[in-house]
Image (tube, rainbow, N blue to C red; front, side):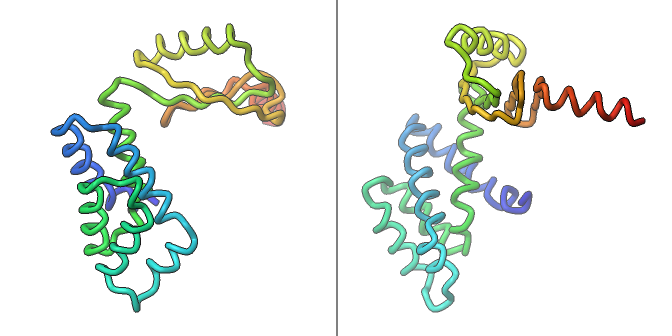
Length: 178
C-alpha cells in the first residue's frame, strides 16, 4: 500500500503545482474525483488489466467515459498515467492531492464515530475543541456505531483519540488480567 502512495506522490505534486499555478483547485479536485471513480469501476479495471489493449486506446476510453467531468489538462494526466502504466494510481493521486489542498488551506478532515447522534450544540463544541487542539479549520463528518457503546472515537489523519466506553472497558480488562 505504501508503494502505491510512493508512486502516486510525484503525479499528485505535479497536479497540485498545476492547480496552484492556475489557481484552479476546485476543477482539479472534481477531475481527480471523476478519474478515480472511473478507474475504480470493475469494468474499467478489467480493461486496464487486459494486455491486448494498448495505452493510447485505454487512455481514450477512460477520457470518453469521464469526458463531461474532466478538463483538457486532466485528459493529459490520463494520457501520461496510461503511457507509464500507472492508471491504477489515480485514486491515490486524488487522495494525495486532496491532502495537499487541505494542508494549503490549513484544514483537516475529522471523522467522529459515536454510539449516539450528537446534537448541534455537541457538534459545535467538539469542532471548536478540535480546532483549538489542532490549530486548524476542521471539517467534521459523523458516523453512528453502537459498538462504541458510549463516548466517541475521533480520527484526524494519523491522530486517533479513542474516548469510547468500549476502549475504556478493554483497557480496564487488560489492567485486571496483568
